[in-house]
Amino acid sequence: MANTSPASPTVAATGPAPAPTSARPTAPRTLLLAQLSNSVGDGAFYVTSALYFTGVVGLSAAQVGAGLAVAWAVGSPAGVPLGALADRRGPRGVSVLLALVTAAAVASFLLIGSFPAFVAAATLYACAQSGLAAARQALLAGLVAPADRTAVLARLQAVLNGGLAVGAALGGLALHAGTREAYLAVFALDTAGFLCCALLLGRLPASVTTPAPTTATAARGAGGTAVLRDRPYVVLTLLNALMLLRMPVLSLALPLWIVQRTAAPGWTVSALFVLNTAAVTLCQVRAARSVTDLGTAAAAVRGAGAVLCAGCVVFAAAALPGLGTGAAVAVLVLGAVLLVVGEMRHAAGSWQLGLGLAPADRIGQYQGFYGAGVPVARSLGPVVVTTLLIGVGPVGWLLLGGVFVLAAAATGPVSRWAARTRDTAA
Image (cartoon, rainbow, N blue to C red; front, side, top):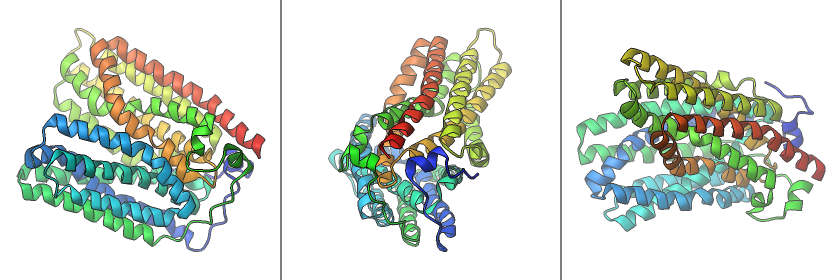
């Protein structure tokens, strides 16, 4: 994201890993290049899209927000059936198809001129993105041995952050120009990135043949919604979604907290964002090295909960009366360090649990469901964190820290419950 023994929980949960073929050693490098190709364009898209839709297309901010909410409300659950399609038809072909659909959706933003057209294009984009994430996870699982998956995912995350940073800088140039042509260039760049991603994914070797349904998955029934009947996996996904409330802390809660409640200057917001991005890019691989099976993954999440809670306490302390500018900045930097350490440890543990407990013949479907926690955290998280942190104040930070600790502590027992259901059925 370190080899596991043959009797490790991950192998027991998913079945023996297929022996690597001669083509497979190049798979991680190709996956990294595919990640880089679309993340640069995404970084530029993220920092310019809102201003393009309001300033060029002529939508109001409320329309943009409502349209995106509708799009992700439809797109998030779409990852489950699209992931199931990857399980049935093969993850490589479905990944390529969804990368092409994503490119088409981004290109369609260049043609929209009304709110209904925006909602349609955004919904297509959200569905394709959710399905692509699930299909790529299934593709990775078919090409990378279980013991190596977390390490590869860690490198993918580092490349993602680096690509987003480069793309954000390019998007900044478009914002500086402020012309319609500059915005269109950004959308063209993102479209080209997904086309390149599709080309690279198409060059990968075919994933291993989808295994026959195991006794455990057969007991839950066939079809594209079997994951919904897997109670321990559903609970695990909900706990992971609670842990993902860390995401709007950096992007939304901290900027408001710094400006409204602390003596720190406004530029601190940018500094903390740069710190977070640089740390993930440089340190995510190292932070994931110790996560090799379900036991170490649960321990990583449990530790992440404690560190995130400590970060919340520190952020609350940044608003103490009498704290000067320099002291407030120092306290916020300490909190940001704790936040990014907790983020990296949680990410590593979450990847291993989500993949390790997914049945080998339904990884796409299960990853589509597990990955829905990200858009849920992005859509509902802002309401939760602003109500808790900005509305309640320092006590709200302590309450959020308690949520992290409880969710992380429950992850271990739930993951063992999930492993037992698989072992018993097998």
